[in-house]
Image 1: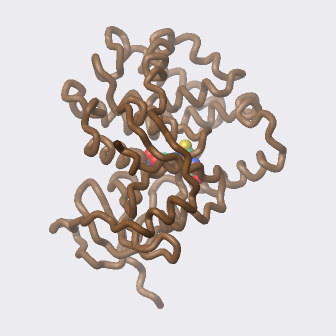
Image 2: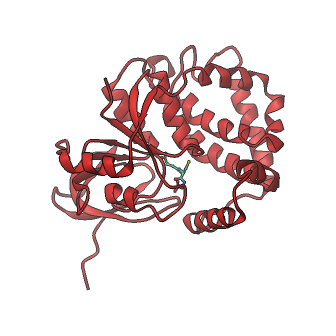
Image 3: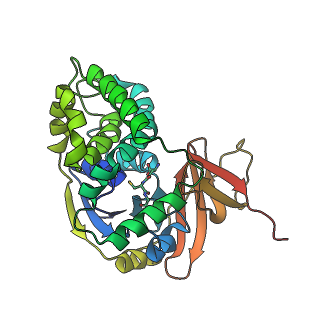
Length: 310
Ligand SMILES: N[C@@H](CCC(=O)N[C@@H](CS)C(=O)NCC(=O)O)C(=O)O
């Protein structure tokens, strides 16, 4: 029983859908906390210390940020069926990394063209749309987002690559699903939520059949939990021990800062308690969540010694 896994997510989030489908693929039971779509997110920050992206995974007092790391953690706890099947080799993660970045960042601007955004936000008050647009503009400040024309052209090319990859293969890396499928499917899932712009998918019949093969995994069995209950669970738990490996340029106990390097680059400060080429772990104290370990992957995150107070 994996009811110790708490996914903090919201219904319309593509990266959350990636994780929900993985929980379904593995047939797991999990607890579900709905987080706000935009800032402020006080209960999120009580657990993460500043990371505002969605989703994140909580297991007791351990908080795992970024779906690439969450997938590794879930797969280590529940190895079968694997997200990293041997037949896929390194290609599964290389493809997943591309899908989580390049594919995602053309699928979102493509879908959010006016006709798509109107469908995604159908029924929402205009103030909600304005607040969402302002939140995302601030979150992606410094990122160059493609025009609708450029995003459409890139998306057509990317969908063609995926369609070609499915020629003679039921899944992107072979006969069984892998992390690549879940990373890629989230972008198609988002486009499909906006019928006025989803017609771009019609030219790709193999992708349509593949989408259905993944959708049947469902979302596993989830039980609702409030954010206050999740914070209380963290407070009552003890984080898992971790180790700072030598040769990484940092010592255990260093005061450090971690921030995403692409967007939503909010800084998380804490004491370094775990480090390897693949993972960073900070210990932080929170008045409500107690002592928590916040974990990040190395790829896509900058680790720095904390700035000395002036
Ligand atoms: N690299 C991150 C990206 C996550 C991400 O961009 N999530 C979107 C939602 S799908 C997000 O955080 N949007 C802003 C928010 O939810 O506050 C991951 O793999 O978890």
